[in-house]
Image (cartoon, rainbow, N blue to C red):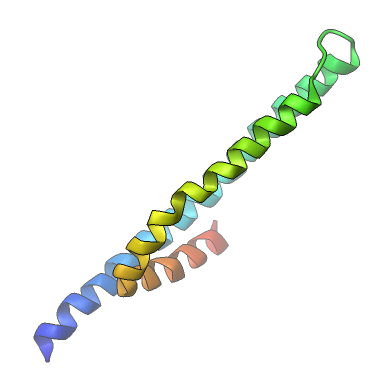
Length: 102
Protein backbone atom coordinates (compact mmCIF):
# COMPACT_ATOMS: atom_id res chain seq x y z
CA UNK A 1 0.00 0.00 0.00
CA UNK A 2 2.81 2.42 0.88
CA UNK A 3 4.53 1.63 -2.43
CA UNK A 4 1.44 2.89 -4.23
CA UNK A 5 0.85 6.02 -2.16
CA UNK A 6 4.44 7.32 -2.12
CA UNK A 7 4.65 8.15 -5.87
CA UNK A 8 1.11 9.54 -5.81
CA UNK A 9 1.83 11.84 -2.87
CA UNK A 10 5.12 12.87 -4.48
CA UNK A 11 3.32 13.81 -7.68
CA UNK A 12 0.68 15.73 -5.74
CA UNK A 13 3.24 17.65 -3.70
CA UNK A 14 5.58 18.48 -6.57
CA UNK A 15 2.65 19.40 -8.82
CA UNK A 16 1.13 21.70 -6.22
CA UNK A 17 4.39 23.51 -5.49
CA UNK A 18 5.24 23.81 -9.19
CA UNK A 19 1.77 25.15 -9.93
CA UNK A 20 1.96 27.66 -7.09
CA UNK A 21 5.32 29.00 -8.28
CA UNK A 22 4.18 29.09 -11.91
CA UNK A 23 0.93 30.88 -11.12
CA UNK A 24 2.66 33.48 -8.98
CA UNK A 25 5.29 34.15 -11.66
CA UNK A 26 2.71 34.27 -14.47
CA UNK A 27 0.62 36.86 -12.67
CA UNK A 28 3.64 39.06 -11.93
CA UNK A 29 4.94 38.74 -15.51
CA UNK A 30 1.45 39.36 -16.87
CA UNK A 31 1.17 42.62 -14.95
CA UNK A 32 4.56 43.76 -16.27
CA UNK A 33 3.66 42.76 -19.84
CA UNK A 34 0.29 44.55 -19.64
CA UNK A 35 2.00 47.69 -18.37
CA UNK A 36 4.59 47.64 -21.18
CA UNK A 37 1.98 46.96 -23.87
CA UNK A 38 -0.25 49.70 -22.47
CA UNK A 39 2.57 52.25 -22.49
CA UNK A 40 3.51 51.25 -26.06
CA UNK A 41 -0.12 51.59 -27.17
CA UNK A 42 -0.44 55.01 -25.55
CA UNK A 43 2.79 56.08 -27.26
CA UNK A 44 1.57 54.90 -30.66
CA UNK A 45 -1.78 56.61 -30.21
CA UNK A 46 -0.02 59.83 -29.20
CA UNK A 47 2.19 59.68 -32.30
CA UNK A 48 -0.87 59.00 -34.48
CA UNK A 49 -2.73 61.90 -32.87
CA UNK A 50 0.19 64.22 -33.60
CA UNK A 51 0.17 63.07 -37.24
CA UNK A 52 3.68 61.61 -37.05
CA UNK A 53 2.57 58.07 -37.94
CA UNK A 54 -0.49 56.38 -39.46
CA UNK A 55 -1.78 53.16 -37.91
CA UNK A 56 -3.31 50.55 -40.21
CA UNK A 57 -5.97 49.19 -37.84
CA UNK A 58 -7.14 46.51 -40.32
CA UNK A 59 -3.65 45.00 -40.49
CA UNK A 60 -3.34 45.24 -36.71
CA UNK A 61 -6.63 43.37 -36.27
CA UNK A 62 -5.55 40.63 -38.70
CA UNK A 63 -2.26 40.24 -36.86
CA UNK A 64 -4.08 39.93 -33.52
CA UNK A 65 -6.51 37.38 -34.96
CA UNK A 66 -3.58 35.33 -36.22
CA UNK A 67 -2.05 35.25 -32.75
CA UNK A 68 -5.32 34.13 -31.19
CA UNK A 69 -5.72 31.42 -33.85
CA UNK A 70 -2.40 29.87 -32.81
CA UNK A 71 -3.81 28.95 -29.41
CA UNK A 72 -5.38 25.88 -31.05
CA UNK A 73 -1.88 24.47 -31.51
CA UNK A 74 -1.86 23.61 -27.79
CA UNK A 75 -4.24 20.65 -28.18
CA UNK A 76 -1.43 18.15 -27.48
CA UNK A 77 -1.00 19.64 -24.02
CA UNK A 78 -4.42 18.34 -22.96
CA UNK A 79 -3.33 14.79 -23.76
CA UNK A 80 -0.33 15.19 -21.47
CA UNK A 81 -2.49 16.63 -18.70
CA UNK A 82 -4.95 13.74 -18.87
CA UNK A 83 -2.11 11.19 -18.90
CA UNK A 84 -0.63 12.72 -15.74
CA UNK A 85 -3.87 13.46 -13.90
CA UNK A 86 -2.65 13.52 -10.24
CA UNK A 87 0.24 15.85 -11.07
CA UNK A 88 -1.94 17.95 -13.37
CA UNK A 89 -4.74 18.30 -10.82
CA UNK A 90 -2.43 19.44 -8.05
CA UNK A 91 -0.56 21.68 -10.51
CA UNK A 92 -3.81 23.39 -11.54
CA UNK A 93 -4.85 23.90 -7.91
CA UNK A 94 -1.41 25.32 -7.12
CA UNK A 95 -1.58 27.48 -10.25
CA UNK A 96 -4.92 28.95 -9.18
CA UNK A 97 -3.60 29.68 -5.69
CA UNK A 98 -0.42 31.22 -7.10
CA UNK A 99 -2.35 33.47 -9.46
CA UNK A 100 -4.59 34.56 -6.59
CA UNK A 101 -1.52 35.30 -4.42
CA UNK A 102 0.32 37.26 -7.13
